[in-house]
Image (cartoon, rainbow, N blue to C red; front, side, top):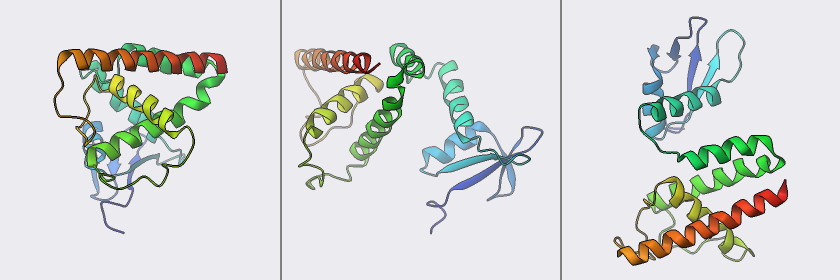
Length: 181
């Protein structure tokens, strides 16, 4: 297994300092964010208790970026995330987010470009894909990497129509989630 594929272990000491076990030096949250941006998997554990703190530190990285004005998550999405913790539909949200970001990664790297999807025959997959694409457009502020099906630039009327379709699909998804709770 290459270094890039191996999970990078970060230990948190009692002093709350973070220690990179690979390079034997201390790191900051920004360093950890940089490792993740380059594709590294990171695990952060408490040295004393052995607790996995990865989720806590990843959320802290996101919160710090948001507080600096790097607004990636729209307020309505943040509110929906908070709501998902208060209702039974919350169990659907993590799977949906995970699948959506997986689609984003595939789109960005164009791994599947030109290859038929092995999942193409599954009933309802097209509807789920459309909902996820609408969600991703909302999450990324309309920015998506151009695909063979989508021209690199669109006229304003077409963009407005796409936005209306996205809003409609998002409303339908929210309605379905509300019915589940």
